Image 1 (cartoon, one colour):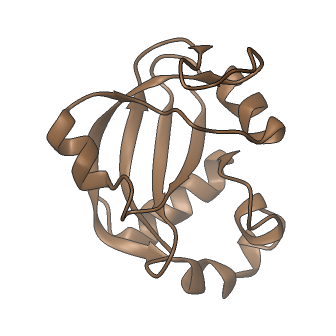
Image 2: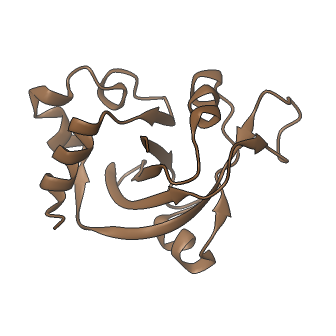
Length: 136
């Protein structure tokens, strides 16, 4: 199992929207690096959902439930999507401010490449985020 982070504008599509829908495709990614990360996702992988914009916080965890497949909203076949389902909201959101304050995150893409919308999460950082969120 691998860990990922996917960003979304909560005004456009929030974690609450995913909970309401119960399943959706993570489409619309048009950055080749982010698309490369989606191509590496497999069913069972866990995904941190990050609300960008004013919130700037990790708010929940989703799970990939399909292998990558062509994004039906894209005209370029190099862009793919995966189906995801909500798993749980974090006990408390973990803000970008908190993450940037810790040296352990200094080399992570969320800190170094602020525009990247999908990125891997090393297992040690996943656990640190779960600890910060107060997850059991």
